[in-house]
Amino acid sequence: MPTDSNRSSPRPTLPVLAIRYGLPLALLVTGAVLIAVGHARANSPIAATGLVLGGLALSVWMLNMMYRWTIESNQDRAKEEAARDYYSEHGHWPGEGES
Image (cartoon, rainbow, N blue to C red; front, side, top):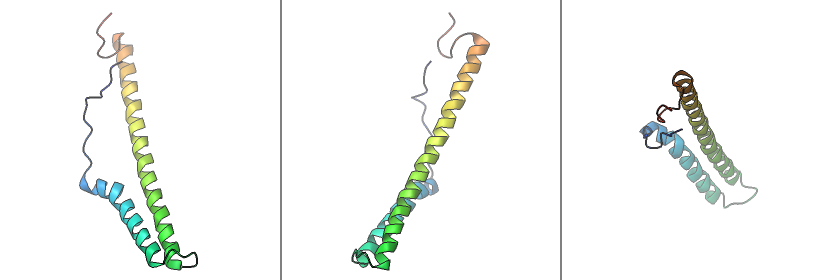
């Protein structure tokens, strides 16, 4: 069965890029600054806040990735179902020609 590897996916808009990459980066940089301001001491509440922001940045980035994987998986499933419907109707897979 042929794939649509040459089909281009839509480019993400600026707000999507800001949420996907900008927000985690901003949280990570802010966390690093707070860790530096707190002198990276274990008893510094400022450094602890920086660590929490670093973890939050990682969480936001991972949630974005999992969301994108879910969307891609659903699109792949829809393509596969459409190809199966085509096969049921025509007796051959799309793009293969008749036997």
